[in-house]
Every structure is written in C-alpha cells, then in structure tokens.
Length: 346
Image (tube, helix red, strand yellow):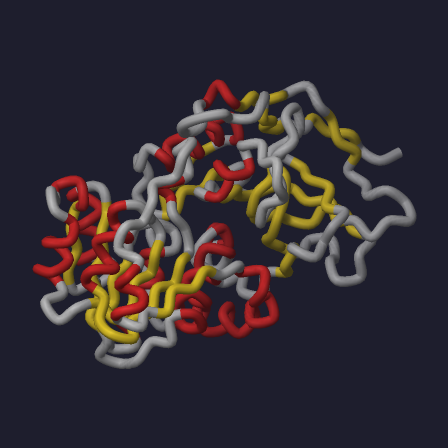
C-alpha cells in the first residue's frame, strides 16, 4: 500500500468579476489527502512542492472568458495552478526520476500529480538557488530573455526603457540591456524600488511614475533623443507616453499590461499614429512559441549568475497558507522583486 499524506491546497472559490483579487476569493483547504504513488499505467509525475511563483497573468485566469484565451481559465472549486519548483516523489515517466528537481506548471498544493508533462522541465543547475527557477531561471527570466533578445532585436548603444522594471521580468531585462552596452531607464511604483533599479540592478536612471504628473515629459527628460526599445509591462497612459517618445524604427516588445488587467473596460491607446509616422514595430509574444530555446537561455543565464554578471531580488512568503496574501500583494505593488511562496525547504 502506498503511503497517504495530508495535502494542503489553495482553491479558487469563484470567478472574479471586477478589480483585483482578494484573499477571500481563495480558500486554503487542509482536509484533502494524496497517495504518494503515481497511477499504474500512466506516465505521470508526483511532485513535492518546494516553491510557487506568483505572476500577474494569474489574474486573467481568475476571470471567466466567453472566448478561449491564451491560457485557460481556472475552475472554481478546484486547485489553483501556476509555475513552481518541486522534487519528484514518484514517477512512471522516462524523463523524470525519483529525486529529480523540476520546475513547470504545478498545483498550488503540497503534493501535485502532473499528468501533462509538456510544461515540466528538469532542473540542470542545482548549484544555484532552486527558488531562481520560479523567476530568474524560470518563466519570468525566459520571458525577459526572449522579449529582449528575440523580439526587440537590440543593438549596442541603443536607448531602452522598461516599465514595471523592478518586477520578476523587468529587473532581468534591464540587466541584459546593460550587458549589451545599452542606456537603460526603468519605471517603478516606489522610491525603494527606484533605488533598487539604480543601485542593485545597474540601470542608468529610474523614476517613480506615481510622482510624475506628466509621463511624456518624464520620458522626454530621461530620453532627450528618444527611445529605441520599450519593454512593455504596463499599458495604458504609460504606453501612450512612450509612443510619443519613440525614435524612428523603434521596437516595442509587448510582454504584459498590468494596468489593464483589473478594468472591466480596458483603456484606449490614443497615440497609435506614431506607429505609422515613426515606423515602429510593436509585437506581442507568447513564450510557449519559444520553448525550443529554453536550454540555450538556461545555460547563458546560469553562467551569468555564476560569473556575478546578473543579480536578482526575491520577495519570499512562507507557507502555503500565506500564498493567497502573496498573490494579492503582487497587484497592490507590495512585493519588492520576484514574489514567490516557500512551501518546503527540502
């Protein structure tokens, strides 16, 4: 008989209809159990969860969509899923062995049975913090790498602007740009985060957007010759201000628009004529289209970490019971750096 363990988990009570999520939208269930054995005849993997990632796109999944989206909606009453790091407890899959450390799509629960392993990756570098695979070496870091190097087509000496720059994606985009010899400016929502950008991550300049009454004027002050590359994480008025300040043949990598996620009616963009006049290339991207480049990215960034060329800041919450608060805090800007939840220190 396989051992049976208690399996604490976080479930979504019901779809969110407006605004940002609240802790009361989620429930920590402590009564479920799990068999520490994968079903016979399957190619499943059973994980013990070590770390969970809190990501902005999860809000999108907490809403009901009539049309299919780029990620499926959560199911009310069921466990929330997201990116995480785990240790293999049992496996009938040839690519994953007991004791392996992995990262990928997993449940917000202490033990998670993974039956669809397409989004599960074996961790190759265990000499760096495993928690980095929720961010720097995981989906956030990979998003930064692809969005900057593949979508933005950067060149040495170009002028780069990153919004939401102290977050999981933005802090790496800025450092990659500096490694290429670019001039880099970031925006953030507090003076603490601005100081982090300049003094920890090496941005040339940074500003607190909440203290700027005129975003276009702020960008003109910091980019008197205009912006070559904008890494878009925010949308709304920031995007409008950027369009006015782009240089001819500039590129905008559209990664996210966190200012729009909580709005019932998204804000319009008013300066799109600049795309024509300045021959701007504005491109969205889905990281799922680039999974074949993941190992290349992992190797490069792991080497940068070991050589001290890249640094990373994490904001850790302890315990699955604190996961809802950590996710809610992400949308209030309470986190400093990559928000993650520590489930087990093993």
